[in-house]
Image (cartoon, rainbow, N blue to C red; front, side, top):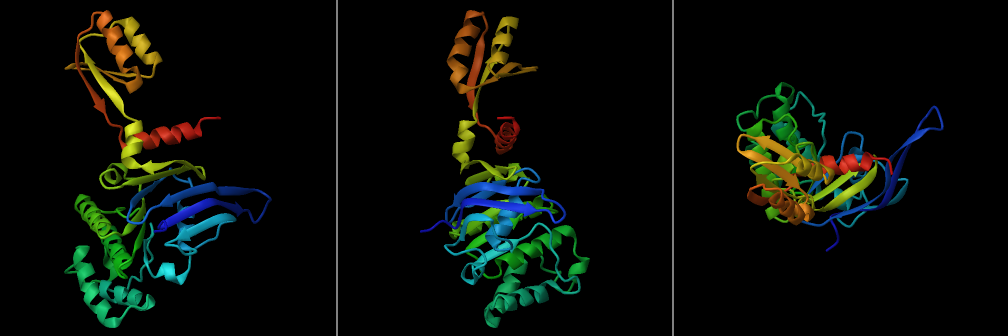
Length: 310
């Protein structure tokens, strides 16, 4: 089975109208998203995420390289008919109601009227908008508009769902509902490609992570594997001599002091030497256990490393 999304050496350069200057939005970016995967697409503001999403949706074309979506070029009607898209900012007709808007989108997608008639009430219920069918969209809150956007993306039962900040404006219950929808889609074999700044939430259900910064791919892979690489070991001690503190700091260990004693967070490769030195210094090692890195820790480290001068 071909990848759901494939970027091969994609470069995009934005030219300036008034000078010879410009901006390289993407520089030789290559990655794949397997079918049926939930992929978190991350990067700081200005990293090139929106350019990538626009390229895979066929809204713009790369200057060099190739993009494939569900085995087709971006913008190919055979791919577009199987994609659901939720942009970061919506521009829905404010004078329409939710059912009318969804019927309009169903007509644009060429859906059978009878199928659309059955599916629209189901989707309105799925995104928790029951009871608001007669309210014009212009009267919706930001969170309600976000829910409606997700409903229109699911309208054609897509094979690939592309989401840009899907939980923006939602309260905790709304974010939980979106998370459950995405997990249900994954169980049906759908592919989800989403960009979000809510890293703690993404960590709960994403299987793959792609991080870009300044237009370059800086890290990708299975989330569990990436977090495993960044893990540390916690060592609890009753005391910490000054010379040991200096040794640990020189090797990148973090030292935390609290009412329960002293905790040292160190690289696993330093574990044996650190414990032996602590014992030799007369310290009582009361506990030692692995500490998994978080997605936020990984993201901040990767982006920080990418910004260091080479």
